[in-house]
Amino acid sequence: MTNGGGGVLICGITEDITERKVREQRRMEEAARQRDALVSEVHHRVKNSLQGVVGLLRRHATRSHGPSPSLEMAITQLQSVAIVHGLQGQGSAAGVILQKMLDEMTQMHGRLSGRPVDLKVEEHARDAIQLAEADATAVALVLNELIANAVKHSAWEREDAVVVVRVEGGPRHAQIHVRNPGRLPQGFDQSRRERIGTGLRLVQTLAPREGMCIAFGQDGEVVEVTIEMSAPVLVSSAGRESNLESKHAGNCTAH
Amino acid sequence: MLATAQRTEESNSEVSSPDHKPHVLVVDDDRVILATLEVGLHDAGYEVSVAGSAKEAVDLMAKSPPDLVILDVRMPGMDGVELAGYLRERTNIPFLFLSAYGDVDLVRTAVAQGALGYLLKPIDIPNLIPSVAAALARGREIERLRDAETRLKTALATEQKTRTAVGVLMERQRLDPQTAFETLRRHARSQRRKITEVADEVINAAQALNIPPVECRKHD
Image 1 (spheres, rainbow over the protein chains, first blue to last red):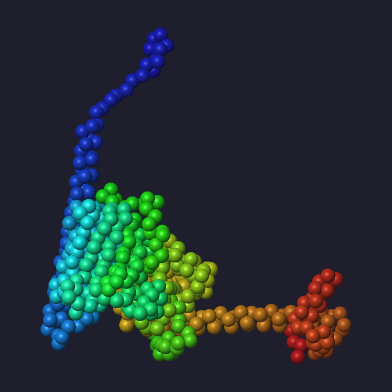
Image 2: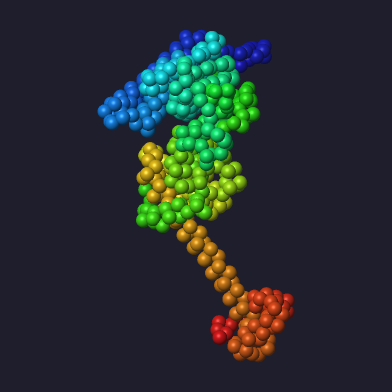
């Protein structure tokens, strides 16, 4: 458009859409909140169902003649998965908080076996170490198997015998040590799959290929299993870390 | 489950043989399922490898080709159907799909593309073993048929060359079919060579001279 003198005229309309944008953002935040609430509710219900099955199995275990190791193992496996769903149902963290998971797990093994199973977590590791949701179930089953193994093979006849689970490290690189009084079998070699038991074969296959390695050692009269974890098994509060940020897993040859 | 489950007995006897453990590769992104299958199949007497992704499976197969692959349909990255395509086009390794109930339509399509069958989740090892054994037996049958087909094709090609060469000799030498064939055979024997090699030479010579060979339908 030009005016009488040939000058260019520009015509436009400006509208303030701030309010609309804010409304849109609020709607999206509300949708995200509803989605999270739904996911939490589903986890919660799955946990309740699994715990219902655990209850039924424990009833069978107490009514049958004498303890049944297979049934008790199945109960701890189901309960471990239930623990993971229970923590995912709380939904406040980016992942599953390792300390909370181990807290429930060590209590479970202590209750079921009637033996002392202690958990020691370094002060700065509390709440800071979180497992990626995608790996949490497999990691829980691995830790369950290792703690059950420690309880089963401990030299309980020794005075002050106790299974200790110790957690060290931080959100990027953490170590779990499972210690029990006893000795590894002579010639024990975790890399020879044909010569290890079903439980440890399960551990080797369950352990995520990246971000987790497991090593067995003898420390005097104590057997110590060390589980090292890093990304992508561990996540920070900001979400899943990239593989480039932590390369601890790449150096792992133990599992 | 597979329709060929009746072959279980034959296959189980082979599994129990210490000399030959069938090698099964399991591919699934769910480590709990991988671990369950690995321990269950190992206890049933199989040699088992596991892969958490299709890419890892391709790498493992290059190092040690399995006798059977059990693969999940839904995997991130290259999915089970794509991996099946790779197995069909690049290898002769038989495969079974592992599927959740809701994937059945997808699996039907995939089975139509060459899978021996599919196994439904949740995994129940005692029920799964007969299907794996049947799939291995079926895989061996297919391998035998493939070998027989190759041998037959070679035999047919040999026969075709010999007949053509006999035709050339009949035309050039004015021989009857029997004499032409005997001449070709005598020539091969005297040079300690295969009759097909000599037949090849005769055909090539005829083509060089641009004489269309007349195929002899009957030489004996």
